Each structure stands twice: as C-alpha cells, then as structure tokens.
Image (cartoon, rainbow, N blue to C red; front, side):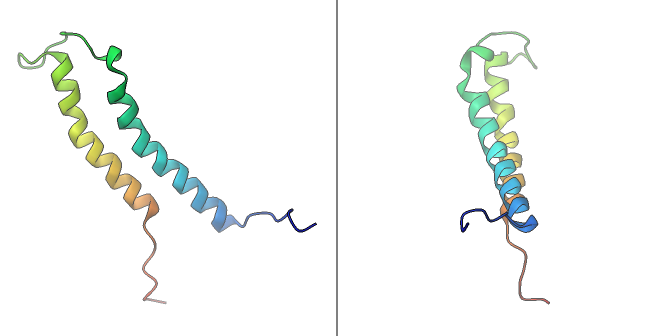
Length: 81
C-alpha cells in the first residue's frame, strides 16, 4: 500500500500554520466584503459615522493580519546549525 503514508509531525505543523495564515488573510477580506454588517451611521466615533471608521479601523487590522501570516509562514534561518 503505497498511498497510506502518515504525514510527519513537521508536515502536520506546516499544514496547520498554512491554514492559520489563510485564516488571518481571509478574516479582513470577509469582514470588509460583508457590507450589510457595517452599513449604518451609528455609533459615531468623534463625529465620524460607523461606516467610515469601521473601514479605517481595518487598515492597521489588515497590516497586523498580514504580519501574523508572515510570521506563521516564514522559514527558519538555516544558516546556523
């Protein structure tokens, strides 16, 4: 039976990190594409309607999600033993 190989622990960990990174990158996209969830005026923040400050709040949120995905996917430095 050649197709019955069990993935190694390292391979499972890599797959889990890829899935987590995908979730980090999917969350902001889904949150911003679901417009009916935030298409309203209130609550206002410093006089800015919710519709606008919600989208602006995702700018650093997206940067944080991309950074976390980068950390999850980066390869270890193999120059040092």
